Every structure is written in structure tokens, then in C-alpha cells.
View 1 (cartoon, chains in turn green, cyan):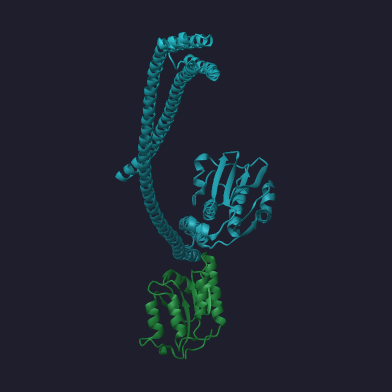
View 2: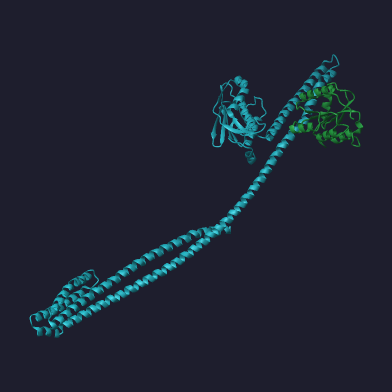
Length: 145
Length: 495
């Protein structure tokens, strides 16, 4: 992953956030990770005070998104990112516990780039995150326009 | 309350009215019969009286005719008169016979008839004598005999007697005629009265019937309304139940789903702790030569490992349970797709997938004739594979395992039995084994206590029943009864 890609991690469970971060790091990803535990703060960061998202112009963003958030749903955040002129090309990786087929379809319909169900077993979880980290190292992330 | 009382009264008075009408009809009929009989008797009597009268008068008439012939003969002496006289006398014989017959039948008194006979004999003797005298030429003597008036007296006596008897008969006849008229009048009155009463009864009956019909119609309407009400109530309740059921399913899903999150953390950080364990302890053991410290470190390490081990096994178990709940809730929400199923085929493929297990425990499997049915394939596969799996899992060691899968058809139901000669289940645990996370007997086999709970939930959703027959050390028989034709409506109505 070409630097400097900023990883925006939206995950309400701080434990999960920490485990995700550690495992991504173990895969050799050294990019900056900005964690958010709720949707409001994440949206404020993503779209800026004017809500246009112009702040991130020419910055490469990758969003790690949990669907179950306390204040808003990840689906709504996904939808707003993909509808935004500046952020619509930023890859969104949905990383959640839900494996409901309808939910998965809906996310892809809305433009999500990768959908990963968190494995319940920790070993699998760690493994999946590490592979995701490896994946991050090879993908191209366009800068926001 | 009053309504039902009134109704029952109306219902009870109906047969009473009918009985009353019937009794009246019988009374009128028998009365009429009796009166007709009476009238007929009266008519008979009237005829008889007329006959009697005629019989008596005939005697008098014949004698008068004979007398007039006699008088004529005595007057003119012509033989035609004598001839007429003889003829009349001879015609008297049947008339007297008739009189005797009437007396013999009891219509005339014997004394009266005897008197009449006596008088007739006297008269005949007198007339015969005059004619004999005249024929002998003793004209004067004959006329003198007539003039003596003895013949006239006899005739007078006879006329008086017959007149008296005729009068008797006439009054008898009048009395009888009066009786007959009276009878007929009574008959008419009785008939008219009876008819009126019967009509009244019929009217009352019709009125009662109409009223009870009206009440029945009302009751029917009420019943219909109640039924409709009940239907809507049931529908509402069913909807409520379904909603509650869905709510529970959703709840189970959410709970199990959300429980996973912290579990991932527990498991994850346990792994992290394990990963740093060696680093910590190697740091602690850096002071060389300190045997006691090294010993202590080792003990601490063991405690640490033990604690981590317990956390791990507990989280693994919790993970399994949560997974089970999640699976059950998913199963509960899964839409059934009914299709025509060949059970023998399904059982065959299940046995194929556990063939390794079968050869391992060296069990003998018998599959009987299995009915075909329309139901959900996946559900039946899960039900049968759980039961077969259990049968294989809990065989009695030291005994050749025998498992039998059989089926039959009972009306609209298909019955499937899975029986084994395994370790069996204690009667106290027959209910328990179907509960979620509950198991029975020696806990020497892996399992969560989910299989039978799952089986029972599926069988119930398919509109069937599951029963267990088992004794310890003898074996268990699970009997599944499923409708042969399952449809989504069935489930909805059962929900």
C-alpha cells in the first residue's frame, strides 16, 4: 500500500479495535490508523465540519467499517462515503460479525469493496486480520479527489 | 338464564301439546265410533220395531180380508167369495209363522202372541162354522151366528190387542228414533268441539314452533357472530404468538450475536497474554543463580498457565454454546420448503456419511420400509441424522450394537422409529434430554446437549410429535410422527 494511506477504523468495541490494529501491524502494515468508536465522530472526521469531505482532497483513505455501531449504522456511513464526490473511490472494508446474506448484498450494492465476517474463533480472527493486512500491502488506494 | 328457561319451557310444552292433541283425537275417534255403533243399534231397533208393527198389522189385515170374504159369501152365496175366503186363510199361515218367529226372537211377548193365536183360532172357528152352515143350506143359522156378535167381539178384541201392541211398538220406535237423533247431535257436537280444540292445539303448536324457530335462528346468529369473533380473536392471538415467536428468534439471534463480540476480546487478549507470557517470565528469571527465585518463577508460571487454561476452556465452551443458540435461532427462522421426500434415500445417505463411525463401533443397522412424505428435506435430514448419530454414540459397550430404523403410515401421519439396544435413558431423564444444553447418563461422549432439543424443535415446527421410549441398559426408541403432507399453511395455523 503506497504511503501515506490513512486507515480509518470505525469499530465500537475497543478490544476488537486493539486486536485488529495489532494483527494488522503484525502483517507489516505501518500506516497511520485513526480509530473511532462511534459513528458521529467518524462522520465528523470523514466529512469535515462542512460535511463536504473536501478536507481529505488528495489524501488516500481506507475505511475499516463495523456495521454494529451504537449511534448509527455502518450501512449509513458506507452509503454516505459512496455518495460523496470526494470519498467515493476510497476503499471501504466492512468488517463485522453479521453474516446475514441480505446485509452482505446490501453492502455490496451500496459500493462496499470488501466484506469480511469476523470469525468467532480468535485464531481465525487473528489470521483473517493478518491476511487483510497483507492484502492492504498490495492494493492500490486512489487519493480522494 | 331466563332465556334458556323460557326456551326449555317452550321445548317441553311442545310434546305435551302434541300428546294432548293426540289424546283428544283418540277420544273423539272412539267417541265417534261408539256413537256410530249406538246409532247403528238404534237404527236396527227402529227397523225391528217397524217389522214388528208390520207383522202385527198383517195379521189384522188378513183376518179383515177373510172376514169380508166370509160376509160377502153369507150375503150373496157366490162360490167366488168362498174361494177368496179360503185363499186368504191359507195366506194367513206365513203371517202367523212370522209372528211366531218374532216372538221366538224376543221381539214380542209370548203371552201376547198366545192371546193373538187364541183370538185368531176363535175367529177362524167362528167364520168356518158360518161358512159350513151356509154351505149346508142353513142360511139363517149362519146369519144368526154372525148376528150373535161373537165373531165381531173376537175381532174387536183382536183389533184392540194388536192396536195396543202396535202402539207399544210405535212408542218404542219413536224413542229409538229420538235416541238416534240425540246420538247424532252429540256426535256432531263432539266432532265440532274436538276439531276446534285440535285446531287450537295445532295453532298453539305452530306458534310455539315458530317461536322456537325464531329463537333458534337468533341463537344461530349469535353463534355465528361469536364464531366470527372467535376467529378474529384466534387470528389476533396467532398473530401475537407469531410475533412473539419471531421476537424470541430475533432476540436469540441478537443476544448470541452480541455475546460473540466480548468473547472475541476475551479469547483474543488471552492469546495476547499467552504470547507475552514467556517474555514476562524470562524477564523475571533474569537474576542468575537465585534458585529459590527460579523455583518461584516456575510456580508462578504454572499458576499463570492454569488460569489461562481455564479461561481458554471456558471461552471455548461459551463459544460453542453461543454458536448453538445462534444455529438454533437461524434454524427457527429458516423458511421450510416442502417437497416430496424419499426417506429411504435420505436415511441411506446419512448412513453413508457415518459409515466410518458405524464400522468403528461395529454396529448392525437395519432399515425397514420407510414411508414417503412431503416435508422439508433439510429438517428431516437433520432430525434423522441427529437420532442416528445419538444411537451410534450411546451404544452399550460389550454388546453388539443393533440399530433399527423403521416406518409406517398411520392415517394422515407418517411414523418413523429409530431404536437401538444401547445404554438407554433413565425414566427421570426422559424429559430432560430434550432440553437445550441438558444431557443425561455418563458424560463420556462429546456433545453440547443440543441435538435432541434441535430435533424436537424441528419436529414441532413440522407439525409432528416426538416421543421417547427407553429403559437403562436396554436401549432407546425415538418415535417421530409427522404429517405426510406438510404445507406452509399448516405451520402458520400451528404457530
